[in-house]
Length: 491
Image (cartoon, rainbow, N blue to C red; front, side, top):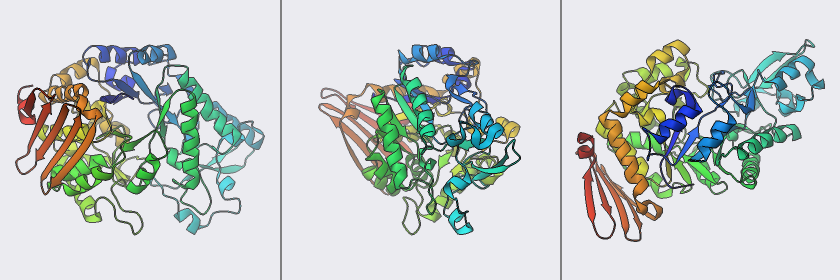
């Protein structure tokens, strides 16, 4: 993976159309910004119960936005990341419909996970209490078969996302078919979506247990043998993330977004410094994605302390709600139809009260942190919370999943904060220092992040006492100082 900034986007929600139009946008208005793009689910259909993360056919591009030929063409110009939806498939899939029609005589019966496969003797309340529930309801949904029998199917997320039984030959074959399809169509990286929930075992949390690590290793090996690398998508306790990073190609740094918000809203730099000293180096950094801002990534676990204390987390969530004028409160937890109650749904721009300089400082910290940066399309364009879309769908995460047409994108690109962010992206892409050694120091309200590679150097100094951030860039012959406030003013 090139150590340059990448884009995260839906093909239709940024381009207003589909994959060919996204390809054109990357080559025109967004030229020079991104070396790769994570295209969020483009499978059939893109508009299911979870915005494409509930595929009816995981090996088919939704014809409304393009074809595999369009994916191949885009992949010839930049690195593409695609989602392998590990944990579940749609209740509307032909396989699950066959199960409903034929029951245990269906050739697809072993593809899906039922409650009694994990709990053949039944599940007590104590056993069920061990299982984390990312949604407000339970983890099983009863479906009636044509035979009249009612079966509890495992549904970790929405009731129409039926969990796969990945321990069976049929389940493994399903995933291998998707991986082989990706490999044949210029996909460079596979994002293992919801992999932490895939292995269920009675008497455990059914999340990131020992067998899950082995399963993730198997999937990563399968991707590697097909010529691709894998990114594991898991929200979890920070020490778990560190352990996962030792065993896979790439992980997300999901702790970074809340820690940056904590620093910029309280001016307390220490939790961020503590984390960046130990964070995985084989990581993808983000501030925002198609999901919400993770809280469990900085929280404690059982009696173990987290990166932030419970009081600091409570204050952070309150600050986000205040900065977004209550918008995030309407979209988070039980307030809307959420598949993850452990996240705060809000655009990162709104989470910082739409303060252009603080937003630019946040992005600078991201770009100077260890890892390859990805920028979500809403974050690229400094989008505000989409309260209208939230009101129409009552889906919490839609607050940060706007549908934009070409005119709206062009207008957003012309905003000063977006121009300044684009300039910052180009600086990150062009400086060889980021391929070298990382240094960090900070105390009270000040932060310093530095990279050195041969004669090249890049240093970011942030002082939140003054709300000031400076870049110092050198190539051995010339030294350049750039104030982010001046970058913003000059855009």
